[in-house]
Length: 383
Ligand code: TYM
Image (cartoon, rainbow, N blue to C red; front, side, top):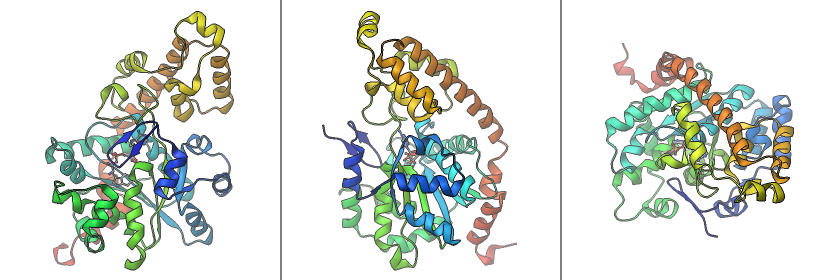
């Protein structure tokens, strides 16, 4: 079956092996995973162990730079078009783990400009408001405030100056080929890729970008001209997509509420949504399921456990076995997932509440933030 992956849309059942070929990226090999474990002291997080991150560009070179003492920095982002869902937060957890283990700077771009330009119905006021809301969710993940700079494009306008040399390197036919722009595309949309590429040049070190693979077209483009501007080609770690509640096709999407659990959902409501919409690999009747067993390969509930909600490998295997043998029925399994999701949401929401007081640390007053703002303000305007 055909599938499609762009920065704006994912359709069909994604064949990740084929996507590696289509996008021209490299598989994240056992060897690289082991090397990561060795350099970071052993225990790998669930996203690496279960191969949710499955592909990369130049991650081997990033690790070599770390070993040689040259170092690297991290960059990731969020387009604030609405509330964030559970899928969006996973690249941020992976980023936090990398920041902690390698002790490196991290830049988080909040693209209120992008979402205003690309979403017909959203006003700039709305994307700015979502930027604030999303920043709270991101801070709740727990980054180091002195090594993390969260910036909003409409506010950190220095980004424009940094995008200029990039915008001079990309012609319309390149942008068309990569992003599918046409004569009807707004001119703001056509300029935007230069803005998303700009943070890859924040430091004269290699930039590693953890994100789902939908964002890769930006890095592919950046890699065409980075060296000609005296910088490194962007390196990336690509994740798969957290599946929608409703099936294993496409991705969890914030604009389709029945597919998503939002980080701000009331835990009770989230539980009801999972109960109602989560597709399982169950049989038509309990009797049939006891006889034939369930089909975890087709089950969204099992996938959610596998990706995020069951970190214990042995317990996951036991769940698989119990499902296959018909011992574990879907109702029970769903109830167990709901408990895990509700616990996660409650804890996240407590941290999110505390984040309200931390926003300035990440945007203006943390060490890295201050450094960036200092550089951004022209000498003439200082004091
Ligand atoms: P956005 O807001 O669409 O997505 C934010 C991050 O979440 C990833 N993602 C997912 N991951 C797992 N499962 C899903 N279902 C899922 N949907 C989205 C995205 O890949 C991304 O990592 N243009 C960007 C904002 C941006 C950015 C960046 C993202 C600017 N600079 C650098 C990553 C890296 C956007 O709209 O992301």
